Image (tube, rainbow, N blue to C red):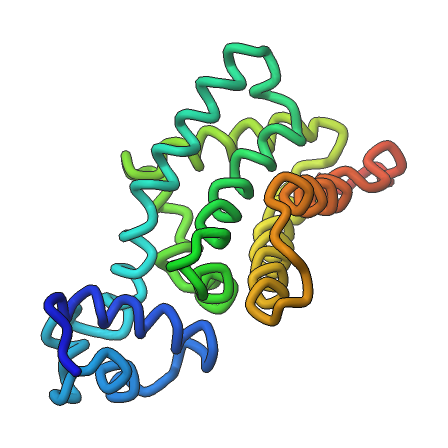
Length: 211
């Protein structure tokens, strides 16, 4: 059945089917799931598969950016805005808040699937005004790991994104399956602790010469 907002229906269907079936899910299946009889509906509204993925990411980005900017201001005020755990929390907690929203059911798994897509992975996108909070947090995380040689620091930070998206996706799956009851504060703390542990493990035992 057609909806009053076919574009929004395509975004919802695309987010869900990409999360469930991967980035190469047929666009006609997304159109059908959105109630569109025209198999080319995705191309009509978004030009391409990449355009759809970008639109799905972007519709959440303004809220995530505003939330992270608010957290930056909060933690600047209490003096913890440069601490590793606080920085990881500012990246992770807003996504967990979205995942915990009843009408957002597949966003965590969607991000895990598309994390290597240029919409998310292209470093040049961090230069945009809509990524200012992420850019600030990423820069501070890099500075918060001075004990690591530059090469290892880059590797840790790249791996952090993979780990973060995987943990959030697993958490979302567990919520959907009813394996665990939602406890937002405890669950966020546990995920943040695991990411911080990955970033800082053996930080004082690294071998020299890893520039």
